[in-house]
Image (cartoon, rainbow, N blue to C red; front, side):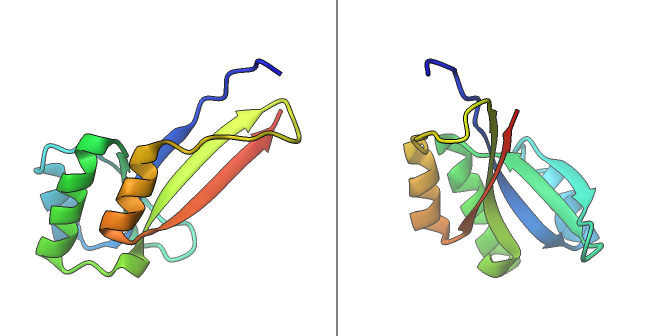
Length: 109
């Protein structure tokens, strides 16, 4: 069971206004945007790391974004139906600092 699992960890803004999306683009944080399939609201996706947590937290405070309109999204695929995965420390730090919930998506290939 020495298969490497590639975790993709992102911070998601789930309901941005157009103005907030434009301002997020200007922050220098690596961000991608889309439209939420259920709510049809603008979403922003930022790769989460120790260094991005501060900028994300500042953006949330500056724009009065509700924590309930954010999450930390972790996805991975594996060929095993049973695995133990260590979540990186920076995810736990972000949860404590920002307060967002964690969402997990996995695929058994």
